[in-house]
Structure formats: C-alpha cells, structure tokens
Image (cartoon, rainbow, N blue to C red):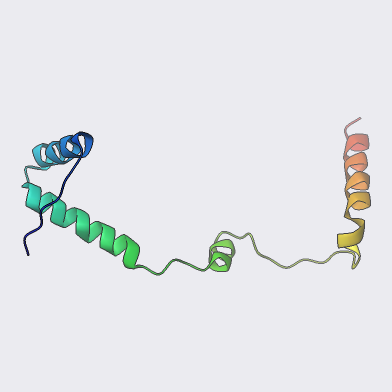
Length: 87
C-alpha cells in the first residue's frame, strides 16, 4: 500500500535526522516506527492492582480494627513518641 502523509517541519526534520543517523530510507524508518508503535499499543495494559503487587505496594498487615476511625489519634501518638525518642 502506498501512503501519502503530511508532516510539519519539525517532524520532517526528525524523520530526515533519523534517516541520516541510521542510513535507512524514509520508508524503512516509517515502517520501523509503525512496528514499534503497534507493539507498544497491542500489548494489553496491565491491571493497576498487578502493578501495585509487582512493586510491593500491596501487602498484608494487622492493626487496630478501628484504625480507619482512630487513625489521627494513632498518628499523633506515634509522632509524639518519635519526638520523645529523639530528645
């Protein structure tokens, strides 16, 4: 298939620079760009929970059963203890 595309000056310069650096034709550079973009977009995006699990942001722990209600008190006590420990 033959394709006719319009590029602004900045993109045309980038394309020409890529051709010069790689020694490849415009057609070859554009084919490679399409292949890379397709490979990037064809991959199903990971589930956000999977990303968090892989990066150790999800874990298990134990705490006061009322922590969601009393978190400010617990935080204040914890910070006060740290301040006392550093004196």
